Image 1 (tube, rainbow, N blue to C red):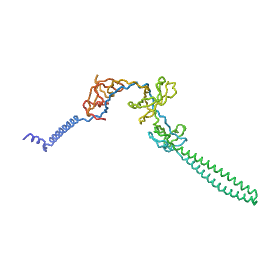
Image 2 (tube, rainbow, N blue to C red):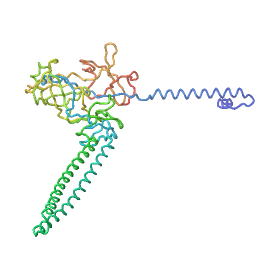
Image 3 (cartoon, one colour):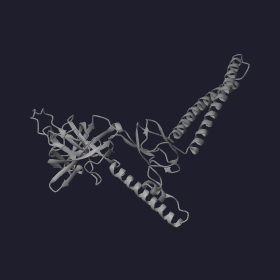
Image 4 (tube, rainbow, N blue to C red):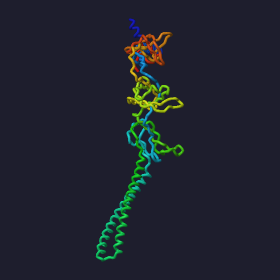
Length: 407
């Protein structure tokens, strides 16, 4: 019997000894499971899942020329046109049609107040006007009759067919009705003005946007009372919403009065928002407020943006650099500072510095030499070339030769 036959005979189920057969079966099953686990482990170790990392492209940093800047200052973005939409009368809010962040147009309806009482007054004034017009029509008919009667009595008095008293009575009736007609026509004018007043009161309950802008706050809800003045112990609102005209945004800075002579109207300014430190916004001086703050020894300067962008928001902090109005002589080219990278991209081992460069989806550990450091950035002299991709934040999972995936 060959070795193969012996192995097959060992695998044959021996029904005479079931316990021994089950033991051998379990043994072979365990061996097969162990082999499968080893195979799976080798496959996982040989092809690990890529690690997600954040990658940026290296760029050369060149120092800015400071000769064109005559003064630096800080300030805030403010809106020249901002309004809290309120009501001319005290009333209860019925409907609100705006939300924060919504763009509204000029005269767009933003809210409605309860108009039940005002509408009743308007209907009463309308009925009074109709009644006044009816009285005028009646008086006009009676005046026509009195005029005909006066003409007949005048002719009859000329023929001496009626007495002078009758003629005087007819003339008095005609003049009296003429006066009544003028009075009732004046009543129509009064009723029309009263109706117009009630119509104005009704229109005042419809609150509209005073200009085109963006809603930055919603201050009332349906069912609350609103009033042009604060009343009710704090339970009465004084406004529906606040609207800002984003096209009126500008910068206000306080310049020390010792340096105000360096600032002039129409001077070019370079503004940098604290939220976007790498974004340089062109601006220009609008006005220098002709008054100084005695306590702070500063003068307020208004600066207007020369571009419009949705990222510019009211009350943002901003740094400004007032540019030199005089022409600057051409300077020699300054030596580059090196490749700028955030300090989170560096790995230190004793005195050596390393950075991970990504090539073809694989992280490569590379030794670099530093030239300078400033704040949260470092400048690399050698080891990293402009245009290469590097990992911004190094995590413990990132190792030399590991596969990475761009996050």
